[in-house]
Image 1: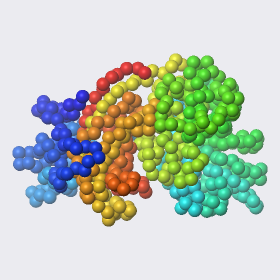
Image 2: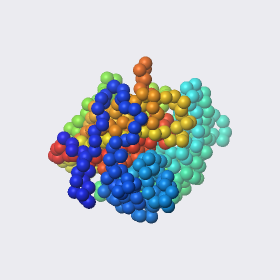
Image 3: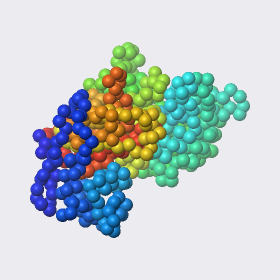
Length: 582
C-alpha cells in the first residue's frame, strides 16, 4: 500500500527509506549498537562531497523533507553550536547532525507543525460549538483522599490556567462558624486532609487569568447553606466585578437559543452551578446546571446545561435518539424514561457507538453545554477517555489533569490547537442544529507510515524512578478517534531492545485512521516486564493533521508532566485509500 517515499525536487528521485523492522512484535531485537541507517541515508543525501552537512545542506533538508523554509542564519547558528570541527564550525559530521536532531530545539522538526497548531480558529460560533479545556476536582493534587496520598492546593488553579485550562471545578461546602466563608474539599474535610477557602481560590483565579482570555467557566458543586451562599455571592461579585456574566438574555445571535460566541465573551467569567431556587444566586449565574434526567424547560435552551459521569455517556445517546429525525424538542420527552433506567445502561464498553447512533446526541450538544466527568468511584483520580465525550459533542470533558495517562495526553494534544487558548471549534458535521439534515462527515481512510528511529533520555530523566535501571524499551503507537474502541485496534509497536536506555530501532509502523480531522496518535515509551505489566516510561499524543511529513522530534512526558525522553521519527506522507461520505 505504501511506497513510503520522499520526493526530492533537485534530483527527481524518490529513493524511499529502508525498512529495518524485521522481527517486529514481541521478540527482542538482536541488533547491537549502531548508527541509524535511516538517518544516515537522509544525511548522505544532503551532505557535501566530503560527507559533511553544510549550512546550505541543512537549509535544503528542512525545505525538502519538512517543507519548512529555514533561514540561512538560523541554520548557521545550529551548525556552529553542534559542530565538532575546527574549520570555523561551518559543517556537521553525521554524529554532530544526529546529536543536533536529538538535542536542539528546532521548530522545523517539531512533532506537530507550528503553523498548524497556532492557526487561530473562528471564534464567532455559539459557545456550544466548541470543545473547552476543562478540569475535574481542580483543587486536588493526586488522589481524592489523603490516605491515598492526595492533598488540596489552591496553586492547582493557577497552574492549570497557565496551561490553558478554561473550565475549573470547586466543590463548595458550608463553614460552620462566622463569618461563614464557604470552603472547598472532596466529600469530607477529614478524608480530603484539608480544606481551601472559596475566597482564596477566586483570588488566585482572577490573578492567574491572562488579559484577553476566552470565557472562563467556574463549575461549582453547590453544598452551601443560605448563610454561606450569601458569602459566596459577595465573594464572586467582589472578585470578578463586571467581568462576571450574570445572564445571556441580552445576547441576540442567529437564533434565540444560541449562546454567545467566545469572541463576545473575552475576559469574561461564567458561573455554572445549580442555583436551587435561590434568587440572589440566579442573578449571577448565567449557566444553570441540570442532571441529565432533569433537562429543564425547552424554552430556556440558552440557560440549559447538563452534567453526567463518563460511565453514563451512553444514556445521553439513548435519551437523544428521538432527535436523530430532527423532530424532538429536547430531552423533556425522555425524562420519565431516564428516571426508570437501570444501571445496566450506565456503563460504557470500549467504543461500540457509530455515527448513526450519535446523531441525536450531536443535535443535543449543539444547543446545550454538556459536561462529562470521571466516575464517582475514581478514588485514585483516574480518568476516562475524553474521546468518548468529544465524539458526542460534549463541550466539557472534565479530566483529573493532575493524573498522567491517556486522558491527560489526549487533552493536551486537543488544546495545543488554536494557540493554546482553551477553545477548539468542533468539525462542521458535529455542529447540528435542530432541523439540519443528518451529517455527512468526510470519511478518509488513511494510512500514515512512521519510522521510529530511536529514543534518548533527557537531563530530567534522572529524577524518575527508572534512572538507575537498564530498560528493555519499545515504542507503542495508537490511533484514537471517534466512533471506535479506545485505540481502535490500530495499535502497533517496535521491537523491544534489551538493556538499552538509548535504543535505535529504525522500525516502520503503519497507522490507520478514518476520521483524521478528529484523530490523535499517542506514542508510549514502555519497558518490557516479563513478570508483570510493562512499565510506562513516557508518552505524548499529537493531533494527526499536524503531524506533517519529515524528520520529527517527539518530546515524551513523564508522570510529572516533564519532558523526560525524546523519540526521533520520520513521518511519511499519508496515503488516502477511500474518500467518501459516511
